[in-house]
Length: 117
Image (tube, rainbow, N blue to C red; front, side, top):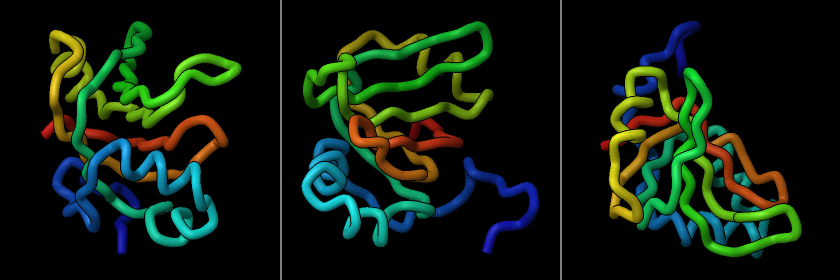
């Protein structure tokens, strides 16, 4: 059970899998993937393709297909302490990212509170 202020960086991942695998699981059977991964701390690994940035945030993106609205894959919203780490990576690069899986929006698997392992 999470406290009111969970320490996401130190949470243990319940699942560790390839980023492409989690994307395919959601794309092919969203209901089954939701039941297993949504709301769970997971760790994904793979080739990180890009980092979307604003002044204070960074979203690490594993890209697996091109959809009507652009790249589709796994998007990882980084915790503030990990923003500079992910921004400094030369891409593409093999990485492991741990975060809370919040679901699938028909184009991307979304993870929040993410850390670069």
